[in-house]
Image (cartoon, rainbow, N blue to C red; front, top):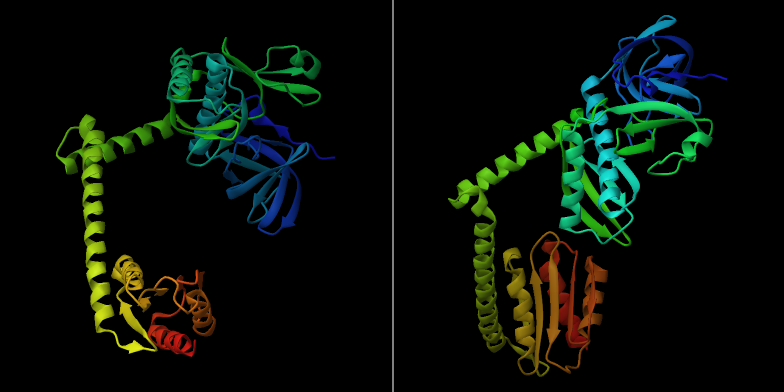
Length: 398
């Protein structure tokens, strides 16, 4: 049975190594290469796989297969001995994020007894799920402050192994289910966890732990955070965005929230006034169309096609026509897809929902409604005139 010595277990800072090729197998993307030893971390425990090169060939993925690591390459390496090189910027970034997660999880447990039940380390963001939905801004800031104090203290991060029986008697943040020797990661006087991931050697190398946002879920809370260079880049982006907003509003950075709030309030007022205006115009237009419509079988039938930008007004016109005596509105609105509104005076003799369903069944789309008002869409705007003509035929067949 093949077994790969995992060099990152004892030296997370190892960037280059030499190994012996034990086996090569073809696979869909190329080949799976098995080595006697490797510094490549496989995707596991919420941490993505390492990348880099093996024998000068890009490593696409590293897969854990029991005691063995399979390195996926596009082509098979030459020779029995190969040199592996880790994509160090990527590895170190993940080391910062993963160690930062240990510290932040410990901080939440220390400040509010919130336990971490899940962890995700992505290419752009990291998240932890906590076992409570009671978190608010104050609890977040308390944990964030404590976590960063541990960073600024530059505490030692030590990796060591202990038999599972002995490890289970230690003050682990989370019980381990592993067998045999357990790999432990200790942040001095702050956290002790069983973990197979890669970590920095001192908390100062984490750089900074920055909580970006959190959301409450049923019985839990998800906290999004960034560490190290990611936190620096996020802070820089935030500053640039805030500075541009301040420039556009002709104010200072700290005035931006108030200025945005003021503009949003003004925009709501304008929108409200616009809606009232459109409603009044729609009422006048509905009355005008009703007066101009020809009477057929004792009812005035309004047929009208509106432009796509008049969608809101068109629906109001349909309702407005239906408020008139003995009236029917057959309204269409251009667009991709187009929209139909069919309405009649309350208690009218026709079934507008049935008529609309017959129209869309013939010309495409879907829709429905009540006896007095129905709406639909999804048909081609080139068929609108045909749709209204067909609807009127159905209406008069009654």
